[in-house]
View 1 (tube, rainbow, N blue to C red):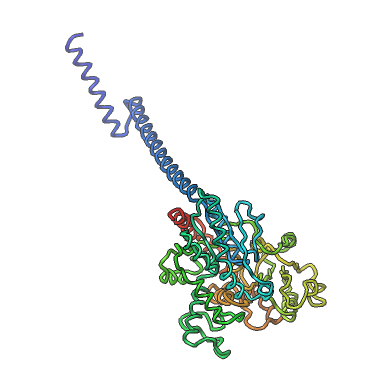
View 2: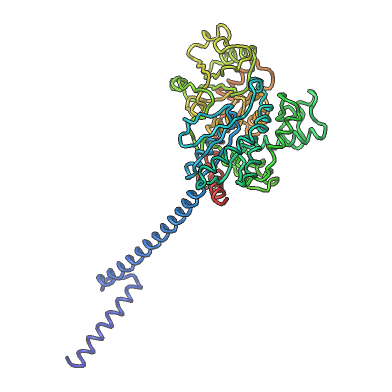
Length: 518
């Protein structure tokens, strides 16, 4: 081939290369469609390969973190829970255990013989009952404060003995942490002596905890006990509580009240405080308590929605009421349950019965055995009541409350306003009628009616006319429409707190991280 011909060929190739690059940058491929398409496909394939490599790197990092967490969990997996032996305390503790078990921890529940939970309801847990040395007279007295003080005095040695035996029997499966109800404050002393970290669970509202502190301060300033003439006066710097709303107790001496409140409120060596509450309900109270405490405050509620565990009811639940609810109209039923502890008299029962009958609303009424002073369950209802209400009423000894409140037929809840019941009702958007008996119930009733404004409080002695008006206001009258709307709004806010990015969701993750770091 002559030199001139070679030059022409080289020149043509060079022009071709230049034109391809020119059209590539101008995104035109009219003269060289095959070349440009080939180049573009190679670029896209290179980008896809880079994405695949990046996704693989991310997946490997994720698996590495999971393996590290699993390794930590396996090496420090046992958690010991010690609940307070009353229904409102047992429920959230076992719900917390259910959540932590789902994160890979093994759960050991140490509990008193008194009001012991049923292990068969939680086969995934290990249960250890310990002697509590309560006398028959102490139990039959019904004096909750005296029983709690006795348990704290009696159970320390047996709890420590049980933990020591567990650790000696399984030295490879060490106890990472003891999580105890704040009222079972002896647990902290045992944890400290055995050099085991401890975390405190509080099962009442933050607002009630602050109100208890206010009671101690007011008593030290000789403002308590207060005369009846001051019962409706506002508590200084604690709006909207009145003196009658303070969580005082008539069950025992103030000395015993103070002893229990001070010891339960003392954080001591706790690594954190878990609170079964929700930021959207108690934002200002949570901010206040965080300023007072030097340890993390983890508001992780509502636990019954976060970790819906199997029933931990101390009483047998009558599920037949669910079939009755299925036959009722949407939001038409008022559910009535005054808790697992409080009692009422025969006259109060009669007024409740006729108030419900005269309201013309369908009702599901829990009458707990032993809750009516001096009467057996089968002789409790006034004469003619059953005939008057017919199929409009359903009466049971105990109900599956969470399932009842979540049912579409239930439009209102007449409650004693214990914190569990309050959270369960607000979480389902169910407005409330409030009849508090003692302690934290009075604080919650005031907040339900005056702060969250999702209920009405029956302030005076139970009277059928007032009950009838309250039921109709809550359920059907125009005056109650605002309460019903606000209850629905609160439900939605609570749901946001539980979702990814919400406060409860975030604090639950922080709790797991904290336990792993102990």
